[in-house]
Length: 257
Image 1 (cartoon, rainbow, N blue to C red):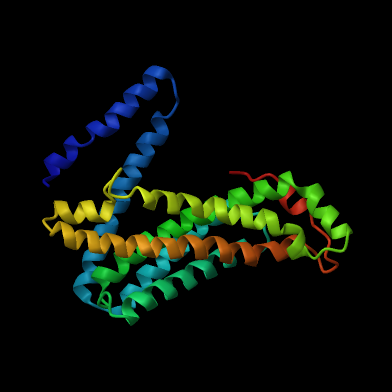
Image 2 (cartoon, rainbow, N blue to C red):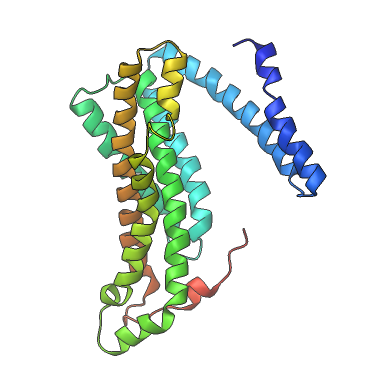
């Protein structure tokens, strides 16, 4: 693709701008900011990746993965800022996911330990984990706020914090994981996934592209499940004090975002 062709694709940005202006949706500013940021960020990352790929240094690979984990953590924590220690909980979850997924992929020699494979795959899996973390935190907070009386009733009857919050925790985990499972049921029939489509457009054999896409899909199942479970079980104890009393003010405070 030439830069001229790329410039012509801005027509896809012009359409929502016109519709937003016509219908007075007020999305023009956000659309322009999102477009400019995506162009700058992606080109910047492209040049950085070119440098990393050419250097073939494992140090730069680790640095890139840590950068992705840091950005994902800072973004996801906004949805759980009223949960004590949520930043390190999310960071720990992402690190565990990276170790588990790359450990399987490299340990079983499914992919070679090179930047060309590790960084893109890590980006897709960590990005999905970030989104699932946000979904979980949103749902978990809503579940707790809607069932404060039930939680306190179970505690008053002698139940443990784990017993009191069990239903809310499980519901939040299931709700955040289900979209990943459901999307995989229709994969290939309703949509061709990004990685597979990119490889096919790049001239790769479609069957080979399918194999790599399945690798990602199976990895996404792990990231979806691990993200919700780890953050959930790390977070719920902080909602109770040492006397096993529910600290309601933790979640009653409104987020600023």
